[in-house]
Image 1 (tube, one colour):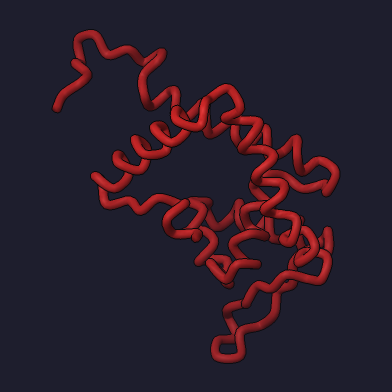
Image 2 (spheres, helix red, strand yellow; image 1 turned 90 degrees about the vertical axis):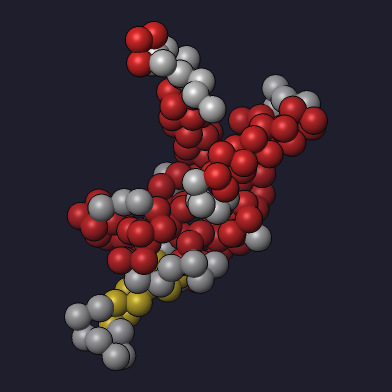
Length: 156
């Protein structure tokens, strides 16, 4: 079903713009809730993916988080400098490294559910439970229609 026409496409207020602004707001709220740990939302996501065995190499993180390899290298450097992440040589391939959380990184990752729930509650606090369920359902429907599994379904 066509909802938009090229002749009068509303760039301002379109679904694309609203989704982009919502994603930016989500990361800003995460940044605020992570300030006491001196890490950003992007760094938090890396620690989460490594800590939950969703990715254990820089290349896997790049694919999972849609980040280019140069940006990922800089982010891993910062996390290593903060002593939250360890890079160990791969035993099977000397050109590759395996990523692991340090004890400090594991402590941050242990706080992930509390931090994420606080930030997401702040994000959607203006919605009723029914509205949140409807929004979640509709976003899931869009993603599934394009064979993109939702993060919620994959991460649980």
